[in-house]
Amino acid sequence: MHEFSQRSTYPVPVEALFAWHEQPGAFLRLSPPWDAPEVLRQEGGIRDGAQVVVRVHAGPVPTTWHIEHRDYIANRQFRDVQREGPFAQWVHTHRFEALEPSVSALEDHIAYALPLGALGDPFGRNFVHDTLVRVFRYRHAVLAGDIARHAAYANRPRLTVAITGASGFIGRQLAAFLSTGGHRVLRIGRGPVVPGHTDISWNPDRGQLDASALEGVDAVVHLAGASIADRWTSAHRAAIKTSRLESTSLLAHTLAKLSRKPRVLLSGSAIGIYGAQRDEELTERSALGSDYLADVGMAWEGATEPASRAGIRVVHLRTGIVQGAAGGALAKQLPLFKYGAGGPLGDGTQWLSPIALDDHIGAMHFCLWQDTVQGPVNLVAPTPVTNAEFTRTLADVLDRPAVLPAPAFALRLALGREMADSTVLASQRVVPAVLQAAGFTWRHPTLADMLRFELGLA
Image (cartoon, rainbow, N blue to C red; front, side):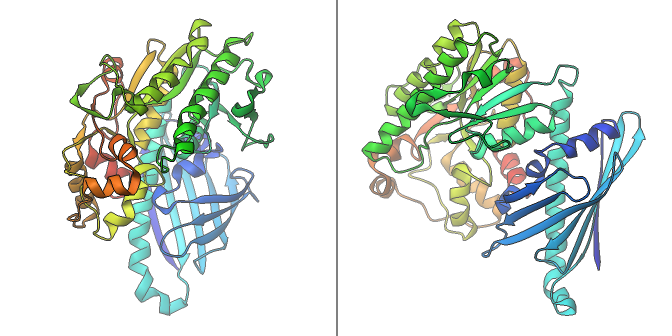
């Protein structure tokens, strides 16, 4: 058997540290996003007999893990034991220790045996050890960051938050993060109600939303909308706009009519509202654009007006290019860059305004609590970069060359001129003036910081 341990201290009582791990979103928050984990089945929490089955895409062939939780002792330990999976044996013990009344420690201890017995050691031992270092460095950093963000509002009552788009790239992590802070999350989705998956049913196409289920919620986060990354056929072009307007209008009108209204609505938007070719520094006070995505953005934000008129604080989340290994633009680029086939898009001079997924989640959480924040908020890092700088930085982080540019004409042929010019060739130098003035702290303020964290290469 081989062993691995990692220990960290946290500025919270041991009861709070242990309670974080008992929340339903803890598993997802701690799962390395670069392995694209899929939870196939989860029964119970972390107490004895609880189980989770997860598919992990680490390498060319996905592997499935069947884990059972055992040896639960409140505020002291629990264990994850592999019932089926890639190892001959795997026992992960989570140990908790109170160091002081407001300081505690977590030690993750892994005892494992490689497959193929002695034959597996020469080939797998170093690889597994290096992988565990990478994984648990990431896990402990996520845990420290989440605890710090929740601790900033620990003296405030826990919230009930309804989320649309909770199954998406951003929404899944937001729901998981909020749950680890002790908040109650209600997922608004299509189809029948299935607790933990869809808690409130809606169908924006038909104007259907169960208003009674929203009575008394404290906050609503609206993230649903058709992806702009799919090819812009005439039908999809229409869907990009209508999916946003119909869902936002339905939600805003429904919230406005509630007898117990939420205090705040965070409604999705995007920096595309400023127009596709803007090289000057853009704040929330800058003039808006006049192209297709700018038109969509203005109509999208305008659809929240019924909620504003009803006295609900509305925040328009003008999201930049979210960097996360499990989705979004970065996930699409990674395969090329990993094989040394990446390069600048067009001439590389266009400005990009990225933000780490971890900071995007943190910024939304910040906006939920900050009563003075309303209207448009740029969700970007404070350091925009050019596409050429992005290319060099990602290549450096991955230790790969990036010498194969994608010419503008080729991108326009592949995507269509309008989509190419509005997305991959767009230039938007956006700064987060509202978040900066309100005192938000980025954990990953530079592109190198966010890429290394999100890819587990810090």
